[in-house]
Length: 329
Image 1 (cartoon, one colour):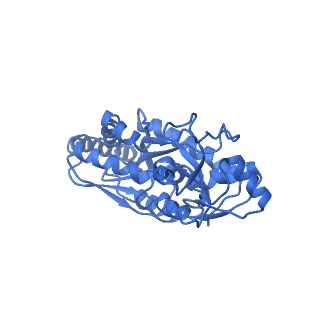
Image 2 (cartoon, one colour):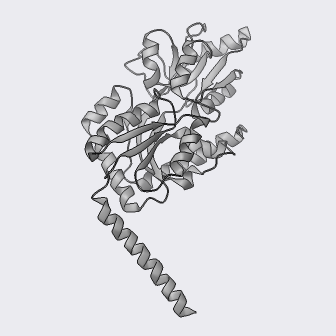
Image 3 (cartoon, helix red, strand yellow):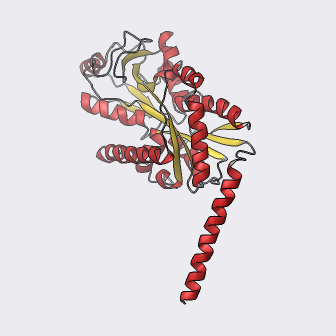
């Protein structure tokens, strides 16, 4: 029996060594074919913008096409499940965010995969400030005025989000609860790409939206900003107060986008992708390009560090989801 056990352990060890050696040998050749980058929303939102900036530069660096694959729907879960079930060979990557990779795990009982188990973090990519905005017809120029208007008029406004349980939804829930007012939630599965037309068309009157996706419409007067989540006012919108100045400190998320791979990807390959992506993201050209759309490059020193951060986010947002009894079957 002991002989059989020793033989089995030896076989496992030999297989592991062979696999490791194989990946070490193949690492220098990666990638040798196109890489797919799955995006959980329609084109036009912050996650899509981040992915497409990375796509162009990492394609040049790798000398292979990186193909963006937008898979909107089910608050990002369609894309999540597709990525999680892909081969862990480095040729399928996923650009996710706080909603898909930190919130959905708790919110969706129907989710067929578990992001913290079935995907592994490569590195964070960017952070970006967000704005509380209204349709221009709403007679309010600040969060306080919005609260006063709803309370005095009894107006029943709609607010939009990227889906039930997405961070724009949870941040709105926190704000409305704190302000003591009610609005009707209208979720949009395509993220900012659908949320922006909805508020411009007055389908919804209030939302929490990233600055990159909304500033052009703010400048054109089609959306009215009330407050921004950054610690200080932005020079691009000097008249827009921070949430702290508005009397609602800490209400609203400075969201993040990050890169993920299917779980089970060999560690040498994961580290190789991490190193390459970090090199691209830290170039002055990339930082300057992303700064133009109000995104700050924020990367991690290792995949392990990033996954640790994501795990903390899952726990923190999970508490908010549970405390507010937010569930999607």
